[in-house]
Length: 318
Image (cartoon, rainbow, N blue to C red; front, top):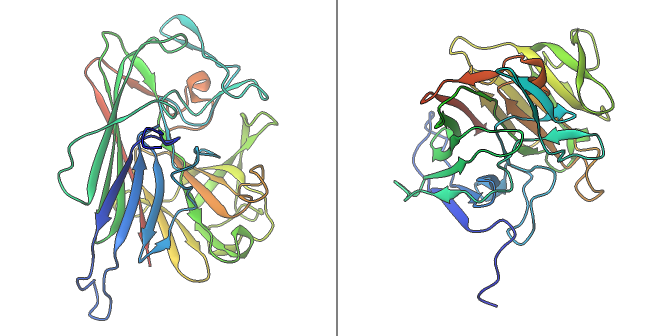
């Protein structure tokens, strides 16, 4: 039926043809393709040389497990959906009722609009978030996806279009494809000093050093059967301010990088997903603030009227 609408709406394909020499004479840059969806403005799939980089999902299915979704105006969870801002007590809808949380923002099931593409390797999505119960603010949201010789770059942006300051946080939820051995057969390298300890509702209740613990990935280390639903903080950064998480699948290296606007990385091994998706990919989620930031205020951005916030992350494949 020609009038059937896909569960994630219109699909936008981004292409980088490659074929030119890379940094060394024997390296040829491979073709890259990504698919961005109307619903949530998320990243459904990304391939390099025809092989999956992300553990995505088909166009005929609704997004599950948050795969590739944009998480704004807060990432992760808000306990009881309640928070205070500028003297007002605010109550969000509980989008995770089993745990009594407001989860992953307000824009991941909304229709986003694609701008006219400037090149086959770029697509920009936008959405105007209007005031609503629990978040009485106006945000002009954007997410731009660019494929180039060095891989995928994603830029999240938000501009306060209202008359008052507003609280803001951002994140995204890609799952790196873990290869034939799944998460259990992959090796992770993520330099961080601390991690958050969370309760049964996935709300932080403390922080601990990771050195010497099962969560110490400051050197490359096999994940094995370790269950990860962990927010890593105090990230080590290179001289350019970039922090990196490197997943060795046994076949190639997938590097997810974040700029300084992203303060933490949430790593999720997918143990609560349906059996056919469980531990198939490793979610490495850039977040500008930790879970429950609307309530705690930790690393929360306050946007003044007219002010814009941007945050960049990307993936390189070797």
